[in-house]
Length: 370
Image 1 (cartoon, rainbow, N blue to C red):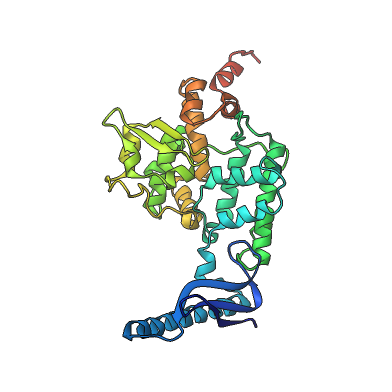
Image 2: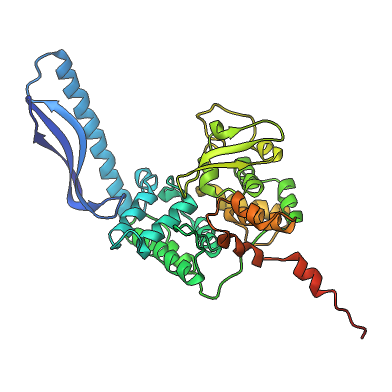
């Protein structure tokens, strides 16, 4: 079993820095690469000259020993199939950035774009503990919606979604092999099929059923309904601050920086959307503080059951629902495109394929007598 040792390196002014030496090297939870040393940015005095320096040395050595013991415990946890809190709370975004960055050749190649699309969906705050089957299926649904984030805003075709999602699944496979995930999500979550086009959405009646049904987490319920009333992505709902909620009754709007484009957005929202946010907090507080994917799957399962809905609804389905309901209720395509923050109206066209009530009505106009 690897051991963790405390090492010293000489500094100036009669000091030594302290670091941990992993022997043999361990894989870093950040990028999965072998890691021999962990630099702690701590130091001790070689010859303490007064009481304060002696106290500094005593407390620093105790702190470093505590860190060393924690790292040794991490190693033992991995041996027996456990993942430490430190690893589970590490950034998967950083890991996926390293994974795609190691393989990409240019900023516009498939690996670079695969990472950009993941950021558009999830934002920058995803940790390993957030990853489960529900999260992965939700991301697959997002990719199937044909988002467009390139300079021209063109929606991606299904085969492109297949490629980008495959790279995400491959990173999960590698993370599982490196014991950064306890579950083999690569095997659990199906790849995107080139022929798969169906995207779940809620009818207005079903949306109301979910509003009326109890849910295990009121936070997740409110956030999902808010997404259905505004069309915001999970990443933008999760990172929304009270300082970004502006206006007054009948004239509310959000003034925020969109995660995908890092551009300023102004989005009009309804009084109901503001109501579902709850009591206004401090400007520097998040509206949906504590919202994460880690407990979302369990909540959705019970919530949908309570509402009597058997569809495979995920968080992204609420953005999809917002778009399709707006179109069905008569909102012009260009307006819906702007509300969704699309750069190109072509990206919005994918929502018109779900259901066109005029076509349904037209299909029943020709009637014969049998």
